[in-house]
Image 1 (cartoon, rainbow, N blue to C red):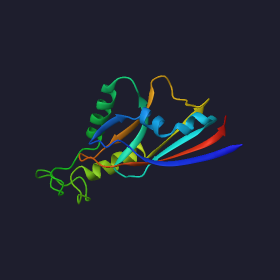
Image 2: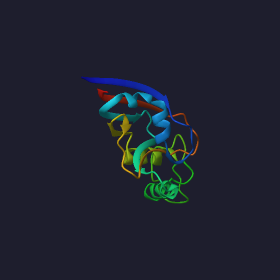
Image 3: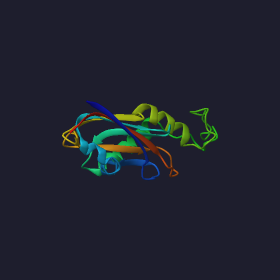
Image 4: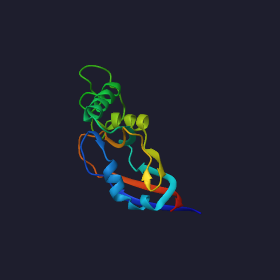
Length: 153
């Protein structure tokens, strides 16, 4: 019989960067252990951060990812639409120079991930982990809605 569980919890607060949160997710969701088969869906309720599945071993990958996203979606000068004599990159600048780039990065990476559950554990690949990517310089409290669907053991 298929059952559903849903829970909301906060992520650890961080300023800009990419963070491995697999153990935090597992600690927040001991219910995973009760499922023989299923899906865990994670959705972050914010528009300037993201969730992703990626490398879980080498922390340089997380730093490189943050650097690469900063090159792809740069900040715009002083956050007031003035980029040192150049035309502004973004119209939206009310919350600072990192806000609009954070929205773009969030749209590119995504606000949700889905991970299979097998025999009471997340069925991640050997080198996969769950990432929280924070795109704002200031620390924020970020909330995740976790939904589990599956068959209990």
